[in-house]
Image (cartoon, rainbow, N blue to C red):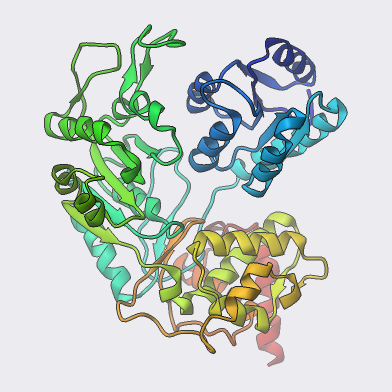
Length: 486
């Protein structure tokens, strides 16, 4: 059995290429899934847990880049490796900058491909075995559920409490909820809070990123299809509404639905029944709809891009999540949480200089907390001497910080909270951290806060922070030693 043993999906419209690669990797001990088109690959990905995907770029109907975009947004932890001909190398290189794991030119160096795949699978399995958690805070909402990683909404901000009060008030109802906010603010976490905090917690939570699925596939994705409904429909496929029956369906970026599909969705919301493509039987479905968008829906309604009647159907309860730039005093605490998480993962000690924290606070973060997390993962991984300096920051952060305020901005008038995409919605907890605080001080606050929240249970506090008990005890000893010396 290979060291990187796991489930690997091979997608290529050339049968011989699939045959050769699958035979080689099967002999290495991998469990191989094969697909000669991307449409079938989507079904496999939805039904089987994948540890890696190897895909061609040029394929008919749906190409490898579209498949990659779907995986990136709906299954972001699965590494995607591209196989490409010389004519599509530019596209492959572009895909790497978008988050693809690696690309090979056909025919690939099979020895190198084996090594890259082994590393990709080990990384994937290591991440899936470790639950994602957020750091310590004050106000929280636990979201239990079968197979659901611990997630917490944390913070003491008044606007955050208002959001939590709204979630608490509607979590057990069937009323539709619309969550708005910029990309990267963590709208899905609010949707999960509504589901896992309410009476439907033990039922399915089905998330559909409407922006990640080609429009021509969205209808079959949502409603399913019967055998023979179209070319390659070799068997019946259950749609997302059926999967979500008795639970919650989350339509992320709902504005990506075309007008004909909006009309079908409106009917489903009114009648609570669907028809699979190619079928005539009406199927009753019981679900709670939660939608999200990063666009101004009212403007889309006025311009005719979104149906007014559907808008009122999905907007019974409205929750707005503000951007990170309006909550700059949260940035140092979030930075501490992310650096602690990635330091643990990479098995290294990393800290940020005061100058770096200042720049992070001054940057406008157009990608919000998702972008902040990405930047801190990058500098942690690339750190060599343990201290991240200004020179280690990406160029766009250094250039953007020059346009920011001279000092960390105060909270917005709305006092809005934000979402920690690693697993928590974070507002200022305890005294708001300032950029002049060191990363160690912020980590100390997080550790002490976790201990208080777990009533002194060190094992639970370590799990809450997403770090090992060994690392937790080490940091605790350092804190104790520093206080003794002081």
